[in-house]
Length: 85
Length: 179
Image (cartoon, rainbow over all chains, first blue to last red):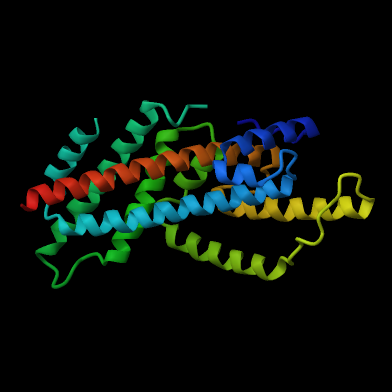
């Protein structure tokens, strides 16, 4: 990814912002106006990333608890691999 | 940019994750016989799982994004230190930021209105830098930050999905084996 410190046009920023808006979940998309401000979108994105981080945190909790109940993970890992293929 | 919803990314991520989880489990079982209590506390285990997931995600994404390098570079030692640093900076940031909901910039705003909007955007951009790995680097301009954010978000989503799949599979396999 080139990090050219040149003149970044407003159009480029706006294009990125609209692309970013397309990534956010439906619920937040409805809340924000079609011509939503950049700052609102940045806030939504921040909040979304934090919520995803929280999900990863919760799932890591759950997974580590599950792993501690298993004696030897090697056969389990094979089973998991075959289940998910 | 490699599509994160493609099977290849998810497979690579899963492979990486399973390898590190397996290593983690082997390490634990090796110590069980010698130590009195559990070698790794549940909290330590959780942190290991979490960093494994991040490293697995970054490695599966490959080069071409800044956030992957930011995760992989200090992955070995500085994990806990980074987390503490992040918490401190977040607290500092919260103290500094004022509620600016009243200062919404109008469409044909005056110059002061525009300045408030710019200040708000700057503050939000700073906040975004905090949550994206490598975002705090001053060399990352706004356009790059937005591109990084998009890339990071889609891969985070895939990480959540795969972690959920793995948890459910382990739960199923665990219950069937224990019976």
